[in-house]
Amino acid sequence: MARISYEVSVGSLVASSQPQKGTSLLRSLTCGLTMDGAGGWCSLDLVCTGAPPRPGEAAQVSLDAGSGRATVFTGEVLSTRVTPESARVQGVDGLTRLARLEVSEAYEQMSAGSIVRELVRKANLGVGTIEDGPRLPSYLLHQGPSALHYLRRLAEQCGFDLYTDGAGKVHFASPRRGGADHTFAYPKQVLKAELLQVQPSFDSMTVWGEGAASVQGTARGHWLVRDLASVSGKASLGASGAVQAGRLGKTPRTVRDGAVRSGGDAAARAQARMAAVGSRVLRGFVEVLGSPALKPGALVKIDEVPTNHPARALVAGKVLRVRGVRHSLGLRTGFITRMEF
Image (tube, rainbow, N blue to C red; front, side, top):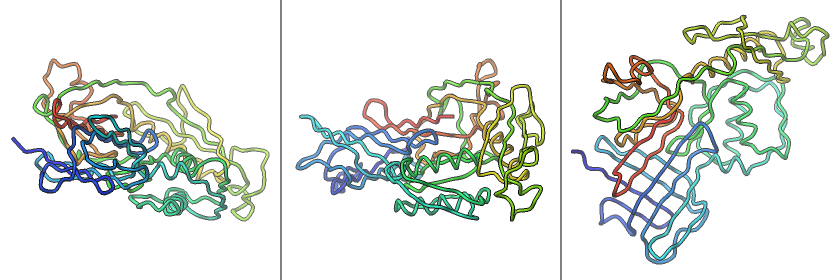
């Protein structure tokens, strides 16, 4: 059986599975990364002597289940609560900085990804995979809404996901497709599962922009037009989950986006948004034996599900896209990783 190891550093404190390296003891930890929320977080229960960690101090957690160490959280201390038995530390990662940051800026002829990179660097965060996405004729940021608000808005407009990894880097990317990055055997590695197959609340979308670029040229993109048909686009999800351009289904949704200035851009936005909807037809979670290499955006397969198991129809032969990961380590539970879809 593989030996589980860990290393936690919070300010000047170090807790390690190698006693000679540690200055404190770890009782338990839970770390999470997600595409749905304000970024990564961690909860640490430490036994330490002297002053406990202070808010703002750097924090990092690395775990190893026997196949190689991986950093599962990088951030800073949000709060520390001291009890007679231990110090309980709550940590958050860099997306919290973006939630505190206000920016007043006007961008012209820049891609969505370029705007994201600039905001990420303003917050002094690491840049991960940031795709360019569409080019925006103009995009205005004003004080009041946070930088994180604008990044989420850009992600929604592009059909992208916004999230952080274990190293604290920010990612802005479209849903990835392809073969599985990780495969888990049932029931050897799968401990618990709860899956929900849902029908999307809408099966198609029309995106309406504004401006006369499609009929008068880009130089007159700021002109208003009476008929917006030239600056609109449609897309729908087929029965197989594939995106179909230029078509509407039975339950369409209408989106008005002032950043869209041409019919081609509107069509591309509609397709990207529906691709994001199609990437999440299965929801729920699966808990497996500790797997620190898992991260949001990973593609996974669940194999060897018994023929008569009700989950077989949902996962057999399918590649699932992970939206959230939570690692838990404790004396009673051991090392467990929870994948959320």
